[in-house]
Image 1 (cartoon, rainbow over the protein chains, first blue to last red):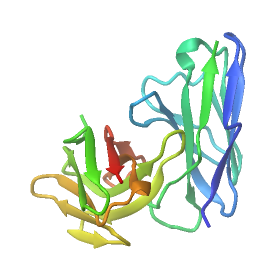
Image 2: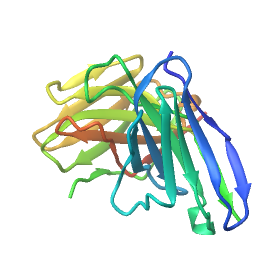
Image 3: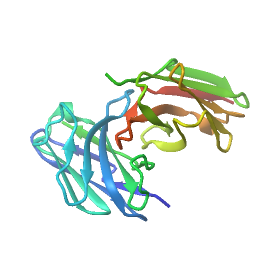
Image 4: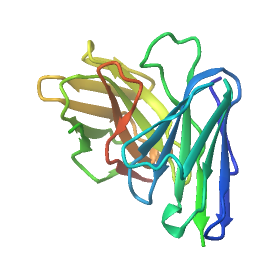
Length: 119
Length: 112
């Protein structure tokens, strides 16, 4: 159990276009989903925390108007990179915590990541 | 500010050896620690976790040790196998926060 999927697994787009990445918890309901960005040979950096039915909380330095997050249900969160530029090229990873854990330190289950390349 | 770092950027071991990956953290309010394994092009995979009220926790072939006095965390992998080759990250949460702070990562290479 506790499987998180992402779609697409990779995407190439032209500069100036928008790209949507989906994150789904397949076999559990997620209270919270997180979005991370990882540049080559670097660690994961938290971009935002997403709770179902409410606005996402963005980390300092992350532009909320550029990285739109929608958490429409307990199993789906989407990240839209608007007006993408080459510097947005990165590995985007989501994670999710279970609904019934009852603890703020519930294990985060990670998706497989989405490789975004902006030309 | 908060930081979680690793002592060694790379570690190369022979198959069958035991591996030890170290991690230092700086925030005394850190209360939950996790080790993740990340293979190339994939998302992090949970290995083992430990809460701050514990010193040691064991899993299958893995042991995590926590020394709160010196703010040090280690992951021990017994009988390392080629399939253990990956980048390992330690991560922590602070003060009951749900946010994970990741360390820089260390690449483990297991030679057959």
